[in-house]
Image (cartoon, rainbow, N blue to C red; front, side, top):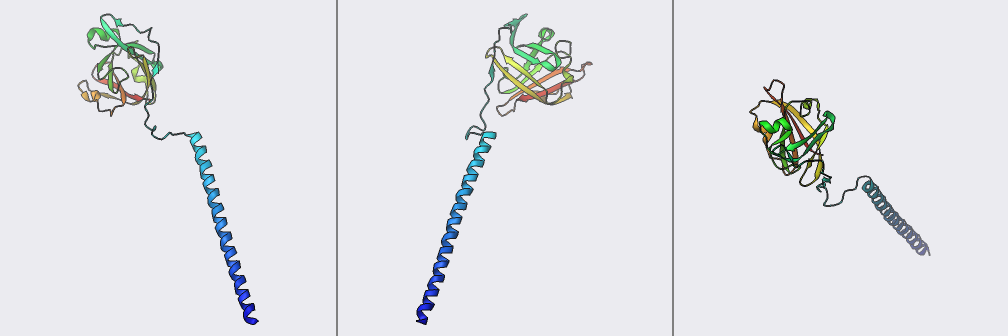
Amino acid sequence: MARYAKDKRQHGKKSKIIVIILALIILAIIGLLLRNKLLAETNQTLGKINPIEEGNQNEVKEPEIVNVDDIPEKMGNYKVLGKLVIEKIGVDNNILEVCDDDSLKLSVTKFYGPGVNEAGNFVICGHNWGGILKRLSELQDGDTFYMINRETKTKIYYQIVDHFTCGPNDISILDQNEDGKKKVTIYTCTPSGAKRVVYTAKET
């Protein structure tokens, strides 16, 4: 009889231990489910704030297409490639295809590089005259401007990332190592003509 009672107590203890273990397992499962639900809701919220589609992190932004009826085919004897607009300093000039003494008297010109709004370093030059690039030195890093390609009708904004002066024979401003990105270099001469004032910008 005593042995039966002892066995019964031991059996009761084992049953309690099993119940406790099962309860702990159930609680762990519930906790895991709640944690996964919370993570899913958090990720969903973050996705709404800053959505990133897989595989599109490096997606190229399509340029704006605009009407180019106000851009002439030619100025004088020079083909017009497009337009340079720097609102901060009142620049709204056609970009001429050829850079020489006569074209520089008319407007800004392409000096070197690819086409307007194409990958690479598009270099523009112009005289330090009123209505052309006289106020170029008023620009600061972070200022923006845009260019329009007359042929493709593309309008792209650029942000100035650097500005400096250099000697007239410094050809480093013509470098084209841009890894497929769009860069614009604009330069003019200082009033004395001894140096160049150079601004570089990247697509925004």
